[in-house]
Length: 281
Length: 252
Image 1 (spheres, chains in turn red, yellow):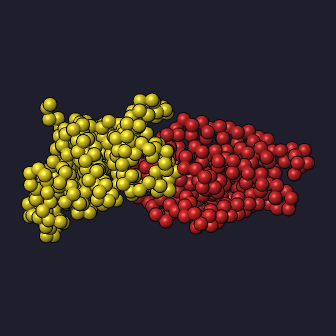
Image 2 (cartoon, rainbow over the protein chains, first blue to last red):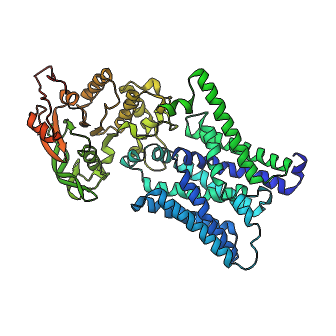
Image 3 (cartoon, each protein chain N blue to C red):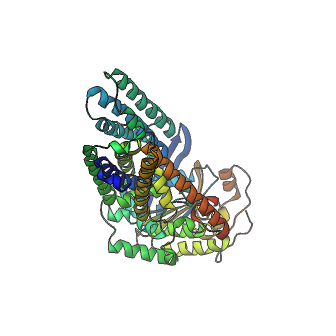
């Protein structure tokens, strides 16, 4: 692995893994504690429409994905808050419509769509330098918003109704949170692809939750776990010549399941462990 | 001190999908009132609290809180929601929950000040939860969580305290302690307590309102059996009060 670092694509892959860990560590914590995994999945899949539009209109598919994730985030947020349509119904509809649009756009685009597969399932080894710059900018935006509005997002996540009562603009902040999920999806597309994004949004945060009940520490831990998972997965995919995105997901999922299983065993012996005990209440 | 009206409700109607939840509620709550609102489940008690908080806009009628709209008076309202509504697994400490109550003072983008921290310390002290300030909220017992939620409502030094079923998950020894805490607070603010537990409430409150879509009684805590029957739409055993000490004659 060390000798592989002489290649630029390998160094870029490590940078991309690190940048992806920052976004998915911070935002993944909100996704997990607010239980908005499904809406995040919807935003991620709807981005396929933007990727197709990029191919058709001849601009960067990642930029197209950004426009589509932001639009679908706002769309899902507004539909669920302003109409009587049940939330999961609205998400399911926009999820499928985004993907359908992508397929139509790609069909209309002349010729063959190169590296379409890498947008769907990720390929951390082909991240170009320009995308690294975009990832740095998006990480910076996400971190700045979360630092500025930390106490608002904490209150909103814990008790939305009380947040309203003490004067927090909860609806607007919820939309901002969904937009940050959208940006995180864009950061993660190159690494694991739109179909696998949901795993990196949930697994590092769920790992971190086992060790702390402080949201800030949970975010820092989730970033570290995210980096560990992407580097570990990248190494495994390099050693065994496997698809990088899928290997990262399977590696992190396996580690999570192992730790959950271990803690359950320990919990049975000591009768005290976070997840097991509080779920039983 | 002049008796200032803290809450004025004038002919409030609330509909949910064209089914009336509240029908023509008129009610006035004055400074230092300790009002208990009782009534059956689904009788609109929580809805009435949410109207006062401005979370629900009535389809008809006028709401004034401290002479202004509920929205513009929110900084002066302390609210204790039903505590079983939040996620018990949520990663948050007692301290962060208490500080949340100071949000209306701190405002968007601003950090909590040292005044906010002092107020949170004092509020946790007042409810006897200061020792638990670094504990995870979800790890506490129901009664302890309830006290933290009361502290959160008190840190903003409200003029009106609204409590929704505060004793639902509190055992009976804790209940006495809890009502004694409210008894100390009532000199500093108006308190409105919603409960379906008639006997406990009627011992401590100064005024009582019976609510089942309509307001059946409002005034002193001595309630006639007929009023209770009208509220609950079924025969209810009599509740009576002596002078000091208050005593419940029959168990409900």
